[in-house]
Image (cartoon, rainbow, N blue to C red; front, side):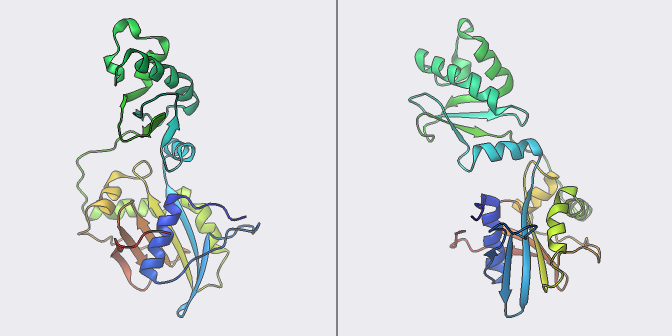
Length: 262
C-alpha cells in the first residue's frame, strides 16, 4: 500500500511537475527497500526524486499529530483558537484544556483572560502558563480548537552573504543526509532531484523570508562537485521555488496560480 503524501510532499511534487514538465510516479511503495519517493521519465532522460521538509523536531512532532487541519476536538458548543509553545506536550494539552473550555462555556466568557481570579483552577493556571491567546473563534467549527504554533517575526536583511551562507547551511544539514543517501543508490539515472520544503521552524529566518517575499537575489553558492543531486528545489510555502541544476545554476520559478496540487 502506498504511503499517503503530506502537504509538503504534495506541493513539492506539484512544483517539480509544473516547472520541470514531467510527471512523477510514486516509487516508495510495495515494500521497496531504500526506494526514492518518486521516479520519472521524459524525452530528456529519467530521474529519481526525494522530497523532504526541514523542521525543528518539536514543530515536526506538532505537525504530525495535528495533521493538516491543525485542530483538536473538545466538548464545546463553540469553536476556539489557541497558541501553543513548541515544547508544549499534546498529552498535557488534552488533559487540561477541555476542563478550561468547559468552565469558559459555563460562565459565558469568550477568552481565558475574562475569567475572574476565583475561577482560576489548577487547570486554568496550567493553560495560562503553557499556552497563549485561548479565545473563541467563529471561523473554527464547534467543538474544535485550532492550534497555532508560535509566530516567528523580526527585522531581516537578506544580503548576498546571508543568502549564500544560509543556502549552504541548509544543503549541508545532517537532516538531508538520509534523502541524499537514497539518491546515491541511483547512479544510473540522468537526473537526481532533492526537493526541500523550508519551514519557519527549521532553518534561518532570512532564507525563509527570501523564499516568501524577497526574490531580488540569487545565491552564488554552488554545491560541491560530489553533491549527489543534479537538481535542487527549495520552497517556503509560497508560490515561488528557488531552483538549481548543474547546467543552469540558480533561478526563481513562479508556479501557476490557476493550478492546484492534485
